[in-house]
Amino acid sequence: MIDKETILSEIDFYSSLCENYEALLEEVPDGKIYFKYDHNKWRPFIRENNKEVYLSPKRNKALINKLLLKKFTGLIVAEIKENLCLLRSLDNCFTDLYQMDFMEKIKEFENQKGHGFKVDTFMDISDMATINQHNKNSHLAEDESRWLSSHSKLNPYLPEKRIHRSPLGTMVRSKSELSIATFLDLKGVSYKSDELLILDGHEYYPDFIIFRKSDGKIIIWEHLGMMDDPAYAEKVIHKLTAYSRNGFRLGDNLILTYDDNGSLDMTVLNNIYELMLK
Image 1: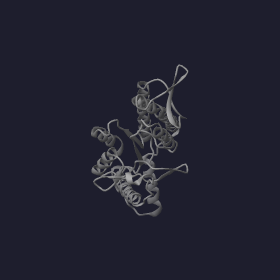
Image 2: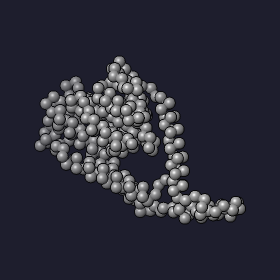
Image 3: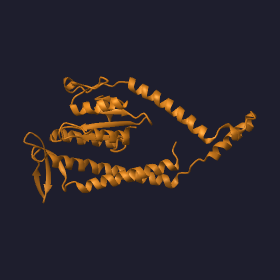
Image 4: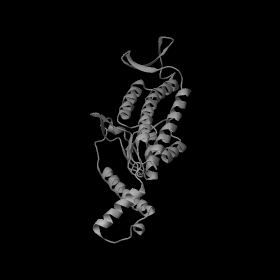
């Protein structure tokens, strides 16, 4: 149910998120990265002093990663600001339904039916909250079960690369993905890996699609393991743009991780769980 408190909470959440990402943008280097087909492959460039400068993936790996992060973060900030504008408009025109309205409806029902029960002792607000939460949890459990039992096709690209097995049997391609899958298994998080997701008529295969048990929200987790490869990075940008167009937003229902040394910090995984998956 939407109420004033929920709307204000969302405004606070997106305002904080916007501040964090704008602070991140202040820390990244100047310049705008772009890719063009050159010497028979896609190569990254940046424009400096009106001159086009090639970025070598070997010598400029860290800079390429930061500029790509800057490019996508800019898209996210624009989406967040749009959400904030809509939420503030909703807050200005939204009117709460109060408990008294609900109790008056019960009294009207009592008078019509003549059951004679005492409305004041029939149900207080804490009873209503408990019952509603119980019903919500039951529905979520049913939704989760249906979601887990429905399977889409697996990514057909190089299936022989799925050589790492998580504790609960999920097969993944890299040691970093194995760390994530193992972590999700140990935390009891429901997820699918490398399964088909159709957006705007196009096929995508997220590293992980997660069903959050607390509210049934679907969350995508992408691990970006080859951002020093320009062709891979370009595909990632297209995929993340499609995610953003379809309502998947960083910090809300989209998780992005990447590593430079082939490993993931467990502290990072725990922070992600606490913030987005509980």
